[in-house]
View 1 (cartoon, rainbow, N blue to C red):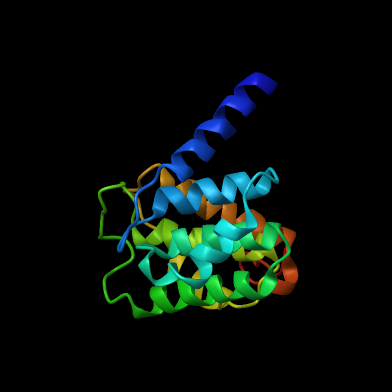
View 2 (tube, rainbow, N blue to C red):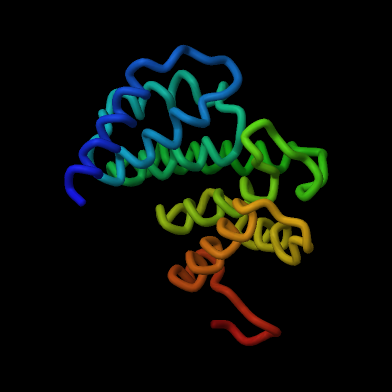
Length: 175
């Protein structure tokens, strides 16, 4: 309902406006900016500030991809691609197994990788290595958090919807 959406958007805007500065974190800010941007309610100055000044302070590849998604929503593809490339570099720099590291937010490297792939595909960015990400998220295993299968499914949907990013194949044939 309209009132619920208005209230939720106001809450995100208030949380963004009252958030403290950070040096390693910012996941909540990135998420809020992505949602606000998708609704046309983010401030471009905020998006540019976080991309130009604070990008290296975001703790996760997913947060960087969410900021990239927000920037792409507002048509700033250059900055968006830079955020997706930084997210990919952060993934490539990770030395730990994608399935065995749990963070305080219950996230792991698996949904980070799937989120980067999903959000890059939705944004039309070619700054990520889609094939490498698909390889890293396939066969995730039997013990998953709720985030892992959801982001994996969203990545599959994004690849089916955007074949130029790499498409999706199942047992050989493209789909």
